[in-house]
Image (cartoon, rainbow, N blue to C red; front, side, top):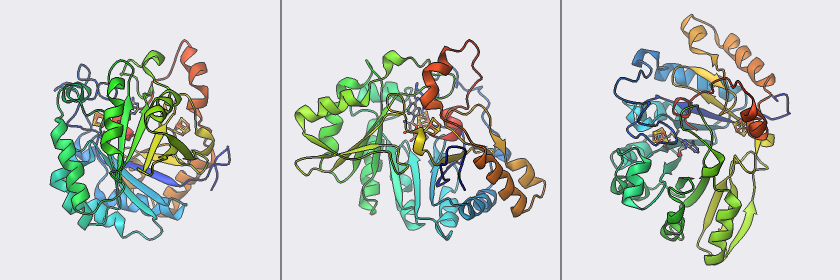
Length: 336
Ligand code: SAM
Ligand code: SF4
Ligand code: SF4
């Protein structure tokens, strides 16, 4: 199944809820997301049965990789149960979860036991104060570091550590992170700050082009490029020449990789989005709850994918110059 630019469907990212225990200013700024903010009600979330049924249909259409995300996925009660269900699906090569790590120490043993294969933990800095600021005053660095250790202790290997970089905020702490994770077996990945959603006040002046970071790290720890985004990967991969492992760079702003983008996103309320910067989602929950059969849900997904023309990152500057811009889906709703 190919879209209008001949891209196959391969990855599905499933957001299990839109709530979060952090308020990272680049994702859910605390001023907008205060105590009266209306998140989805729990009956609006897809149930685990509904997620499993949809995942099965997606797999029959070519999906090989599933990633659970949020909001913060470890806040969804009984998250282990949906992982257990998904881990038994035939045809899945990879089952992963992205978390801010705050609750990971609690969950790690269960996640491993029910068959989660890989973990991504977001960690923007090792500086306590900056960490607190970048989690909206809600996060504690120690908890995240303990979470990573606990995950490692129960057998998660090659954990991906995602770091969003913002100029003037955490760029002076890059080398500390590099030093900490070099040789650990885990892969640090620097992400360019993106204009996801409509509320984070994004401006290009806060973006640090990955090439700048590669240059900086290379001076201290010589790097060698080992792979790019050709096969549908989001990161440019490098290795340390001294054998201390890998490091990655996700450059959605300065080096768009739409040409190979094979990802589809499902929000917690059952909408399907064909791009991280989409302005519209296709509702799967309504037909599901109205009793639609697998064949008609499959048709709806197939039609949506085969008509897909998204390539926002390649058009970013052009779109941002337009006077009227349609609101985009928020990151905390589709989970990156
Ligand atoms: N709460 C979980 C977490 O933070 O890992 C999962 C959901 S979060 C939306 C997924 C990823 O998106 C995180 O690694 C986060 O750093 C990244 N992210 C959020 N807003 C971003 C932005 N404006 N630019 C780049 N990455 C962003
Ligand atoms: Fe929460 Fe993750 Fe968004 Fe931070 S990036 S506010 S942890 S959903
Ligand atoms: Fe895929 Fe949209 Fe990102 Fe391009 S901008 S890589 S189409 S999610």
